Amino acid sequence: MTSVENTGAAQGSAAQPTPPAELPSVVDVVIVGLGPVGATIANLLGRYGVRALAVDKATEIFMVPQA
Image 1 (cartoon, rainbow, N blue to C red):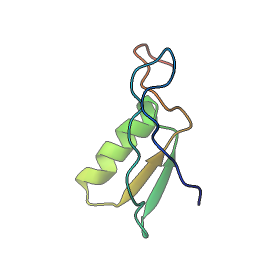
Image 2: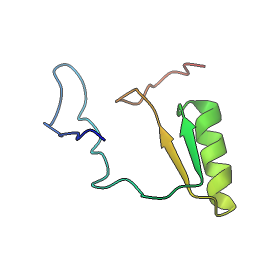
Image 3: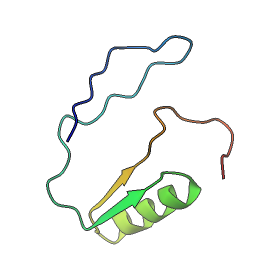
Image 4: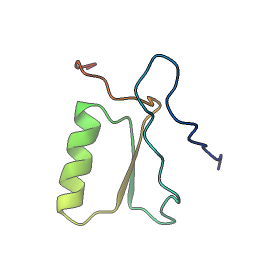
């Protein structure tokens, strides 16, 4: 696993979100991609008590839909 260091705001963008200090050691589902479908399924799984981890390569939030 790689370490991520938060160095503050990147040039020309808003402050980067701080990653969690530690990832969970056990999850039931890994969701790759946190677009509209990934976010919806993560929400629904959480409502049913399923331990889900959602990951995405994007480091910032998009203000317009990307789907």
